[in-house]
Amino acid sequence: MRGAGSVVKVSSAAAALHVTLTFPARMGIISGAVLLIKDSPGNAMYLTGEMLIQNGGAVTINNALQDAILAYHSMTNNGTISITKCSNGIEFLGSSDTLFNHGEIDISDVTFSALLMSSGANLVNTRVITLNTCFDGLVLVTSSTAYFSGTSQVTIENSSDEGISARHNVEVLNEGVITIDNFGAHGLRSYGSFVNDGQIDITRDVSGGTGIKIDSFSCCSGSVYLGSITNTGAGIIQIDHAETGLLCEPSTTLLNEGSIDITDCSGTGFHMEPRSDAALADGSVMMLSEMYDPVIIDKEATLDVQVGAELIADL
Image (cartoon, rainbow, N blue to C red):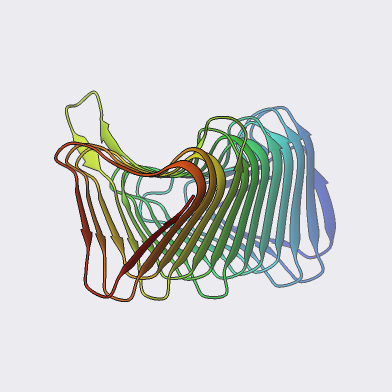
């Protein structure tokens, strides 16, 4: 199925091996319609034109040799996107373009990244995203942004490497609920800017994992990226069962104005590496329980427990 310089409407059930939509073409999946793509020999959908899935419309992709959806243009989902068995689930490379999800996205059994936003692309989620059985769950790179509204629900399960990876100059704002369960190396890794104004629950590392890693990263060009996480007064972060609960790498920053609860760590609950900086603001709470070392503060690291804040360690 191909479209170029036209408007393509799917108004009933349709099936294809792959779909190519070329700018300035647009595609609409109307309410009640289902587009099924199965056993694609390459990318199941290749989009440089705009796609809209209406409420009640659906795109189902099963078994693609490469990406399920490779997009270079804005896409809006008000219906349902279901993806299984592919290389990457959705790879969004449209500079300054946006993936709007006001419906449901369900991606499972992918080889690499379930949802990859790159090259300045933006993600806006107000409903449900479920990512299951992948190498990395949600990956944001190269000045991308992500906004999760107060009605947003993101669930990432069985990521063998990282649940969420927020990389070079990325900006993330979460006002909803993010659940990361059964992760490998990191539940959440950030060397961009991450603000939590909602709830983040991270549970069950596979083996030797870190719940949250605030990363300092140097790349081949000589650029250095220093991560920061702000947990606002309304923010809740819960980490349960990891080797290290929360790790601040050198020269990174953590500001907690809300609640951080870390339990059941085989190693360290909260580890600050040299020159990292953390502040617990007035009214905030950090609770550490059931672990070998609750807090490790390395040379030249600074932990500021302000008046009215609580740092509680319960072995």
